[in-house]
Image (cartoon, rainbow, N blue to C red; front, side, top):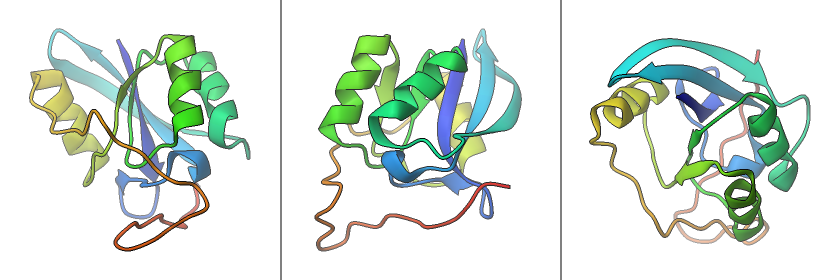
Length: 127
C-alpha cells in the first residue's frame, strides 16, 4: 500500500494545508510495517490538481492536516482514502497508521481563503 503525507521538508512534520503543500513524503506500507519513504515534489500544482499528483504516485492513502471540500471530493473520485486533521511528525504518523492507531479527524475541513482563529497553514518549501 502506498501512503502519501503532506510534508513540511524543513521540520519533517505534516504540512497543515493540503492545497498549498509543495511536496509529499511517500511511503510503502506492507503487513503493518513501513518499508521506506521518499519525498516527491508537487511541481507547483495545488488544490484539486493534487489528487492527480497522488494518483500518479499510485497513492492509496493520504495523511494530511487541513483539506477543503473540493480536494476531498477529488480524492474520493480518485479512490484515495483520506486521513485528515493529523498533526506532528510525518514518519511517526505513518508508523501509527501502519499499526492501525492513527489519530485523525474524519470530519476535517479547511476553508481555503478564510483563515480564522487557531487555523494554521505553514509556508515551508520542498527541497
